[in-house]
Length: 503
Image 1 (cartoon, rainbow, N blue to C red):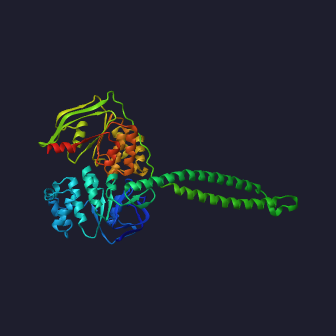
Image 2 (image 1 turned 60 degrees about the vertical axis):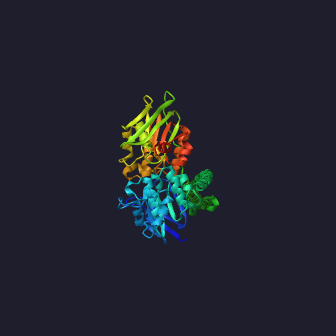
Image 3 (image 1 turned 90 degrees about the vertical axis):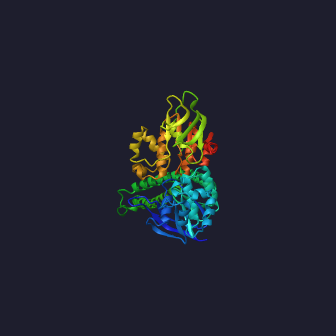
């Protein structure tokens, strides 16, 4: 076992006045299975790239292992997956490669195909298997779950649980719980490392936040008392000062009055009041510093529309095909008010196609799809890469209330500085938050969300869960985060079953 040591590291992007990291120090053991979490924009991917030496920084990072970053860049995707893995880990024997990939449910048929023909999930698994075959290598795994369906996430979690020596950035709680033994957390004002999985870290954080909130109440009272005392001291000092105004103790006869005594007393009171005021101000500042490390997740609000009948949508024996290949068939279900239906299944099984068809896209299909008359739908697409321009302009274009839109983004941990940036400069998680915030501004009968949580941090996921459970909107959604689905879905439609019937 060896260590990765980070000492007094400070980093800011060129042209930015805000440090991403400011004089941070910690160490990581190279045999840890380390989960990496924190709000979007806090610097998780930036830290991984600092370890890779891609940016200049102040301070030192020392390690006795080589770092390898996932996702790995493939230069020749026409090669077979087996050939690409052999290039990544040239010291590995073919039987070792096959054994590793079998652990990830990749068969000979898959690994001998051209890499470019594999699904995103299959590519993720192949690259992870290859990278873990490299010797003396510490893996930096950056959000691998965004191309994995629920079954794929469970497979990769089991695989990673049998490994060691990696940092894993993921916002999927169940996935993290299944494969890590330490947590590295970027908090509001510091960085901390704890032993355990995500759930144990969350419990500890809740206890710590509860304690800090109670301390917050106590400290605010103390600060208020100190400020009142400081103002009283100032008035006392001012009164003493007025007593000696216009009096020259050298010219007043002591036998005829007490002016010299008053002047001396005023001088003494002034010095004492300044000392007291200084101590009070220092105490106020020290206590105020203790109030800033709680990651507040303010509650969100949603304004749904009431539909005039209970049923909003019915689907009867619906089938969708592409290029003469049937994606799914004989799908039948109804959607009624306050239903929250999760569409689950592997990638490419037709979930997104169904959502797009309901939203009005021209998709060839058979069977019957009946939407309620004058049904208002709010749709969040899977892809957010098209977003560009300013937030104000986007709000105006979408016809939503600008103030409400920005307020929701603030609650989702956008800084005011972000409001001035072009959306081109946002992280993928921040772009997804823009789409969700826009949807939360829209009054609708039905909310249709296609993988809304991709790249979105855990605290924001929990905010959205709380919102849905409180306001109970009618929701049809695709999501591979098992914890989210288990917590909010009232019904599920499993496309894997339909795929098995087609096979």
